[in-house]
Image (cartoon, rainbow, N blue to C red):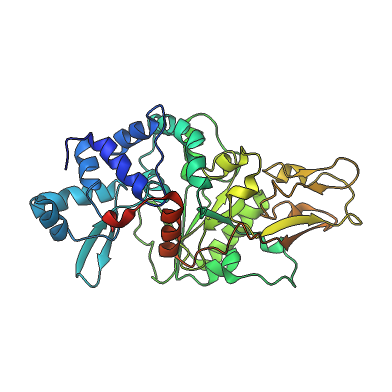
Amino acid sequence: MTDTNPYEQLAAVLDTIPNGFPAAKDGAHLRILEWIFTSEEAALTSQLKLRGETSEEIATRINRPEEEIETLLDIMNSKGQINSWMSKSAGRRKYGLMPFVVGIYEEQLNRMDEEFAQIVEPYVDHEFKKISAGEPVIFQVIPVNQSINAELEIHPYQKAEQMIESSSSWGVRECICKKQKYLIGEPCSYPTTVCLVLSPRKENAFDDHELTKSITKEESLKLLKESEDAGLVHCTYNVQENFTYICNCCVCCCGVLRGIESLGKPREFIKTDFVMTVDADLCTGCESCLERCQFGALSIPEDVCVVDPERCIGCGVCAIVCPETAMEIIKSESPEKPASPENQIDWMTQRAISRDVDPSDLL
């Protein structure tokens, strides 16, 4: 370790993770870390590895007493600062570094107060779009099943219901983005406890989880339907397997969507293989769909709804309120947006290459 400020050191490490942690010109990124971590916690976190190690392995590598290290690691894990899991191969707990987004930030759900919400607001407003716009993008949009033609062939990883059906455990938690906006005096008009958490293989994974309420598969499917009825956008990790969450998002709160919505062509900054179409013979120009679109992709210049393909992200929430069933999602794959990476490792590898970062020291 050098004599570098521990928060600057940690910020540099987090930005080396493929997800990224861009520095803010006003130092907001450091103020965020100062709120989340003590200087001792920041210093230790910056020495962890993404792969995870036992407390004995960490203590040996950084030349500190294991008992002292393990106590601090357990405190840090309870504060949502690091990753931790029981390793069958090691026969004991491992501790690892995790990205700021999706990771450390979301794990501050129970700790977040008005002070932290105010500190993080400018960073979410300005820097999240840099994280969102990298390639491969973090989010992929999952279209509302009801808005898709039954004859349209789509991949299992493009069906929210299929993700839920194939999981082994299900949970729900309050949306940290909506909580953050509420705490700064900008409450969301949409439902707020709508973040679905999934475990691909482990049963009863959320039974004793502090942030996540364990629910059944049936309750998960019901919450998914309620979210789309409310007009929320289904988003998940931009991979093809082992899904761990389905966010039900809005542009007023979501750190990712609010960033890309402000850009001229939001479709370019999110993974989607779909776009909305309108049957001009069926559309009556009733305007039922207009306020459902959070991206301003719909207009009725004359008597028929028109879709702006550069702003439409193919979520489908507009179609389900059309009284004439004049709206339908079609596939619109683009060579500029290759297929989603197969898994998280593939995603991180591609993102590291596109950002020209080398995370090998963290592995």
